[in-house]
Structure formats: structure tokens, C-alpha cells
Amino acid sequence: MAGRCYGCAARFTLFRKECGCPGCGRAFCAGCLRSSAAAARCGDAPQKLCQRCRGTVSCLFHPFHRRVAAFEAAVKPCQAGSGYQGLSKEDRAIAERLERLREERKPKSIPSEAEIEARLAALKEGCQRPAPSIQEMEDRLAVLQGRVPPSQAPRAVHQPPDSRSLTQQTDDLLTQLTEEVAIDERYTPEVPPQAANRQTLNDLSRESEGGLCPARLDPKQLEEEKNKLLAEAASELREENTRQEKILQVAKRLAALRGQDPEKVTLENYNLPDSDEEVDEEKAIQRVLKQLAEEAALDEASGFNIPPDQKTHQASVAVALPTSDESDEELPWCCICNEDATLRCHGCDGDLYCQRCFREGHDEFDLKDHHTSRYHLPRKQK
Image (cartoon, rainbow, N blue to C red; front, side, top):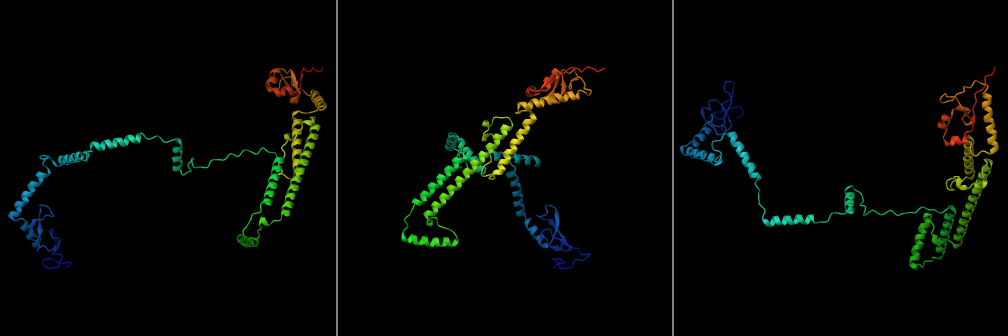
């Protein structure tokens, strides 16, 4: 029936247009939709309906049905808006919203006195609980941060520093090795025959892997190994002592050359290398010699620890230098403030100073070390 009228089966054309029935929704031509009536779907306005929908609507509007519909229409507004009679639609909507808000604020169920007393007792019990300790709070914080709680963390074991000397450490190590060897020699476990057979089988597998069982070592071999270790340790100690003696001799010779007392020189004044870090004896001696040579060069540059004869020689040379320069035209005022010079400092390459600038420009160390002399204005040669 596509493209045809549902009532007369006529094909729709340009002059026969397709129309729809508001009641049933089927397609009809204009000739089949002649009767007009009010449809429930389209409100109170009259619409063109087909014959079938027109019969249904006319049946509903029978006098009996009309009276029932009028009665129901009169009763419903009275029941719905009994408290809002005479109000407009906007005022009625506002009143309904207020009523709903009041109903929402009303408590759904009022608790009894027993329930209130039980709730109050539970609140009092919660307040009487003791406050958590600092340790518990730290543990909870550590758990929240994903760390091990401090109460469960292992405590750090204090390891005191080893204050023993190298010789004492070597002696203690040798004593420990000797005691361990003695314990191994005394220990002879009793093994049952079945266990011995199993142990031999296991030992065969171990020997095939290239390992050795310490129980099969000969006591003579252990004794030889012990003697070998003792001999090596003794030779290392002798080498260490000879190395320290050589370094001490070189230090005393350098102290004598520098004018110091050789008897006051000890090995504590020098940073001796450890035997584990620097084994080469020649490198250690060269390092100490280099350190002593640098100290001697610094002393000569600063003027400390110089023998008296060398000091007098240097002083005479320092005094002679300015006299040779006196032939040049020297300005007779202070090199700082241009006041009249009163003294000459031989420790400052013969510069001229007044009393005030000399005190301000030299600290306590310079005042003791720098030699000065009175300065007199040179007489003009005629």
C-alpha cells in the first residue's frame, strides 16, 4: 500500500495529495478525511479524521460518557489544588516548591530516648580513649609513606673505630690464624659408615668440579702454610721498619741543613703512606723528599729558619742595594701618602714610608720580620 490511500486504495498524484489521520497515523487522501472532530492526541482543536477514528470519538462522546468525564474533570482540580484555589500558575508552582522543601526538611524518623542515650554513651567512650603515643604516630606516618616503621626497623650496631697500630693489627691477625689452625687440627668428627660413604660420593663429585675438602689436608701441609704466612708477615714488618728508618734519616739530614734540631724530627710530622696504598719504597721516599724541599723553599722565601750567618749576608746585600740605587733620583717622600719619608723598609725592596703609613701597612708579623733604617734627605751635590 505504499503510495496509495489506506481507505480507497487510490494512488497519490499531483492532484490527489497524501494526508495523514491524526488519530491512527495512516495515510489517506483528502476524500477519505471529510469528517472533523477533536482528537485526544491533538488537544481540543478539531481535526480531520478517518471514518474509523471518527466512530471511536463519537462513541466516547455519548451522553453517559460525557457526564462521567465532566465529573472526573471537576473532582481532580479540587483534589490537586485544594490549598491553592484562586492562585495563578506561577504562584501555584512556587507554593508547590515551598511545600516540597518543607517536607524534605521534616525528619523522617524521630529517634527515641533510648537511642539518643546510646549514641551519647558511644560518643563519651570515644572521648575517653587515650591519645596515641609519639611512637604510634611515627609508625602510622611511616606506613602511610611506604617506609618501614621505626619500631620494626633494625637498630644500627655501633662499631667503634679501630685505634690499633699496624703492628698490633698484624700481630692480632697472626694470632687469630694460629688459633684457627690449632682448632682445625684438634677437630676430628666421628662420621658413621653410611654417612662416610655418602660423604665420599659427594667428595668425588666435588673433586670432579675442581674443589678440595679441607678435612683431607695433611696436618704437615697446614703447618707449612702457617709457617709460610708467619714468614711473609715478618718480612713485611721488617721492610716497613727499614722504610720508616730511611725516611727518618733523610728528614733529620734535611733538618740539619735547614738549621733545625735533628733530634726533634719524628715521623709524626710527615704523612707516611700506607703499605696497602703505596708499596713502592722509592716512590714514598721521593714524595717525602719533595715535601721537605717545598717546605725549605717556602722558609727561604719567607725568611724563617735561616741560619744567622745567612741572615747577616742577606741583610748586608739588602742594605747595599739601596745605596747603589741612591745614585738615581729618588723622591724623598712616602710611597703611600706623599708625606716626607722618615724610614726605609728593607723587607719591602727599600721603599720609603712615614711613621703612620709604616704602622698601618705592616701587621705584627711584618713588624717583627722587616728590617728598617732611618732615612735622611740626600745632600745636593754642587
